[in-house]
Image (tube, rainbow, N blue to C red; front, side, top):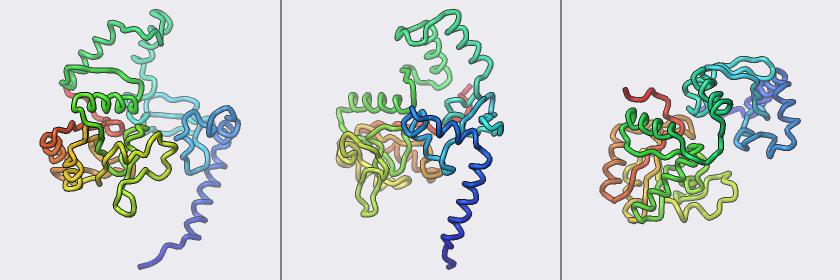
Amino acid sequence: MTGIDRSRVEALVKRERDRYHADHPGSRRVHEQAGHLFGRVPMTWMSKWVGGFPLAYATAHGNRVTDVDGHEYVDFALGDTGAMAGHSPRATVAAVQRRIGVDGGITTMLPTEDAEWVGAELTRRFGLPRWSFTLSATDANRWAVRLARLVTGKPKLLVFSYCYHGSVDETFVVIGPDGLPASRPGNVAPAVDPTTTTRVAEWNDLAAVERELAHGDVAAILAEPALTNIGIVLPEPGFLDGLRELATRYGTLLMIDETHTFSAAPAA
């Protein structure tokens, strides 16, 4: 087996990074001038950019994003599906303009008639009878986890190694090199060791899931339809059905988190 020439890899990475710097001086300027932002970015995960600094965008419409250097991109991420209808669709722009400029109010912390209309429309589309609103996928997961603990009376979660559920503290658990649960490498200042709040199994391993559920203390299995944090790892045939059966057998809730994967049209 031919070994990897690491010096060549390093040279190729340097070449591409140098090209990125040369092509994006405006984005580099925005990054370097952002001295009042922690990590020089609005949200710290934005600093995880192989070129050394993230692209800074100037405009975004539909599926196109233009950066401050004038480069146009087709956006396949669409805000982790938060903008899956495209950036600034006309209907949304009109509704926001009416709310801000005509009706008034953004953070009144009071309900409106619109909220019930949206809840009813979600029920029509997806079949679930009750809805609660949050401001992010992370907040949605935190709220769902609290409800799961409330209704089951059990304290722990079961997640999968290298899963993605936003920044919920309890989900930053992986199977370590020794086969034991461990805090995920790079996990920053958890309030408690997440292995005390969470059980963890490898994706597609139903036997491991059952071993963890057998302890009797898992309120919910928090799972993605497909693992998305280490590339896309699809469930093997029968895996999700197996999770459903095991959750029912052990009195555990099964929560399918669509944070990354909800990108298809709703049911008619």
